[in-house]
Length: 241
Image 1 (spheres, rainbow, N blue to C red):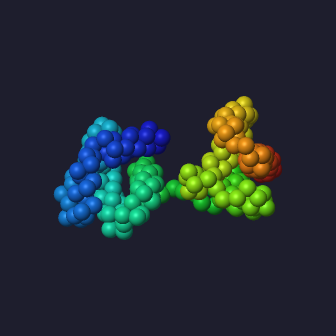
Image 2 (image 1 turned 120 degrees about the horizontal axis):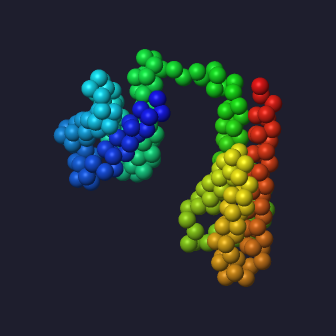
Image 3 (image 1 turned 45 degrees about the vertical axis):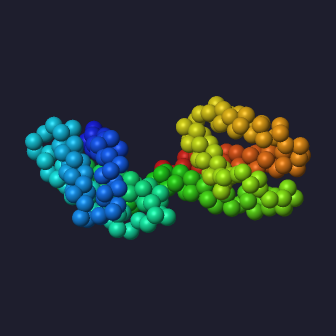
């Protein structure tokens, strides 16, 4: 099924990003279900899958994908607004990839074969739990822990991107989590060094010792929590038979 999914994913990205001009996108957003390009775009996806599979009997999978792709795109066009286009772009892509997984599964096995109970009882749930804790919950924990110090250094720099610090923290903890699970400790050290290099310019230009200490506290706390929780997840997973 891996080869089938790979070809379907290749067809998806070719159809969505290489064979869909901007003029088609604009026309679809203006006319929605009345746009001829919505239907043409869906047909192209189905044909691409059929061609890449190179099997006459696979026409059914191309047809199924074209119909599902049409439905997903139409829902996005109906519900998205100018202020939510960015969010709907990512939602749309995730739903497309999930639909590809399900269609490939049905085509190969004849039914949707997803054993939710097995997934929830396996080691996967330990790692999923660890990742969930490390992202947004830990951002709030670190923010609360550093609140007394953030009050001392005053308001954030006006040139700073909105919520950039929170997302940087989430990404760095995610990377640390993955690196430790893969037993690539050198990558964790590289990540810490890379962040230190980028932060060096800010610290060098700043004469505020409080800001320097605040940044160091936040970085070390973020990395420390990520390392501890990653090791704890590995230990917990080792206890599951």
